[in-house]
Length: 365
Image 1 (cartoon, rainbow, N blue to C red):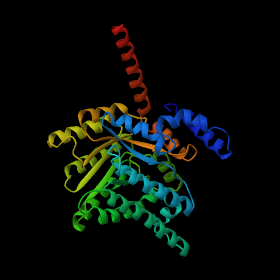
Image 2 (cartoon, rainbow, N blue to C red; image 1 turned 135 degrees about the horizontal axis):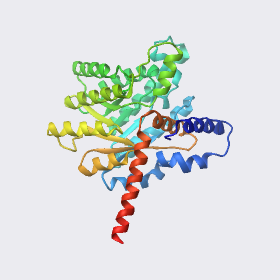
Image 3 (cartoon, rainbow, N blue to C red; image 1 turned 135 degrees about the vertical axis):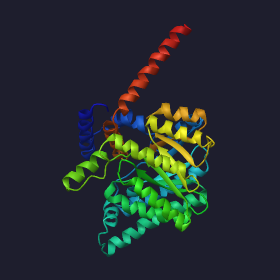
Image 4 (cartoon, helix red, strand yellow; image 1 turned 90 degrees about the vertical axis):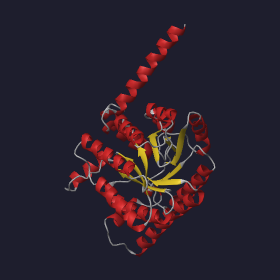
């Protein structure tokens, strides 16, 4: 994945193979799937969740199926997500649950609502169903006392998700924070949005839950902006994104009475800054208002060391049928080429550890 041209070719061939139902699922399963996914169903994820919890690393199970189009498919995913919320409430190693807006409603309907496009009668009914699904998930999380966050989407459909999740927060975050929205900090407008959300919450009397990440649609966002001739919402470079992320993180940590924060980052500097702030404020390492998270298959050095010290550390653990989680897997592959140095750092650390173990084995011999 540190070879950009190989990733592009691989993505093209994968999509082509699946389109023509070529027998490539076993190859996907043995490579990128096993690297980034916990299994094909909840039961096959149990081994991973139990094992990493032995060293105090929590898991967040994510049925990572997206790109569906029918009410029947969306209702099936809704049922799956409701079961996962209940499953999390019964297992202490699962502190969060998650859903993706486009997993329970068509992309086009989110886009139209975000763009304030006039809906026809059928589309209005469709949007009502989407809102009902979101409310069912949030109410179920509220009933089961489980934190639930909505994953982020592309900028041109995110407005509808933002508005809906604000409504859910105002409804279910009156006493404690259970409902979270995700902010992609490679968007230059997210700091301003965070501050406005905070002000709105104080005025309306609810608490804010935010997961902050750098983002996963950089290339797609820039390509679309260029194609449609508008200014890209993405920060001009990685350095600007880092500043934006750290600013949002610092803002949240400075307002913990109103905001609970879920730090989704593989950046070591950002994690160190968070730890320094927690120490400076003399906060408990296990303060439930602050969680750290990395993706399964990435940055284990961060996740495991945070857990070892005593911080709230979690891994996002996607699962689902191989064919259905391919969009998620391809996004991970693209992300690893667009985030400078991520894959190279992973390989460097793996090779370093391999050499250390060899030396230790030799000395013990």
